[in-house]
Amino acid sequence: MDLDLRKELKIFFVEEVAQDVGGVYREWYTNIIDSIFNIKEGLFYEVINKNYGQNSFFIPTYKEFPHKDESSEYYEFIGKVIAKAILDRMTMNISLNRILIKHILQMPIELKDLRYYDYEVIILND
Image 1 (spheres, rainbow, N blue to C red):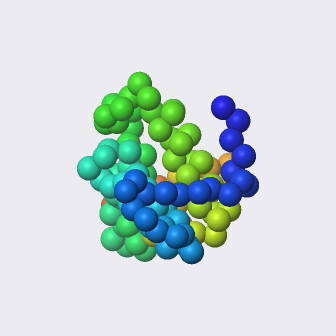
Image 2: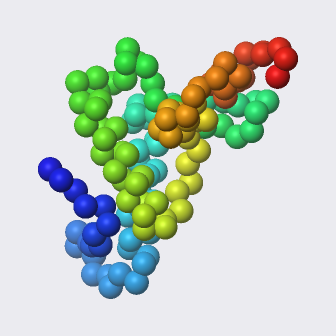
């Protein structure tokens, strides 16, 4: 299915009579982002960054992932939701791990980036 993320998205909540002037739209984005990044869902887990800024979200390894068979579809959908939110200039209260962001942006991941994955890693000559 070819999806044009630039097209306007219309959101309606079942059995709710509301004229959307931005509130329903923001609420939908908030609900879906909160669901995606809910630790209980198992799509992401929280990396504790005691020494290098705020905590961040990272993708679990294949062995830990509860939805192994559908993983590519889940993350493709998540990528499209985040891309659409960015295009729609929606604020998302999430912090992706630096290593994950570098991978998405196709930037080289360096040894010193490991500190954002495991705060106990000490890298000399930094």
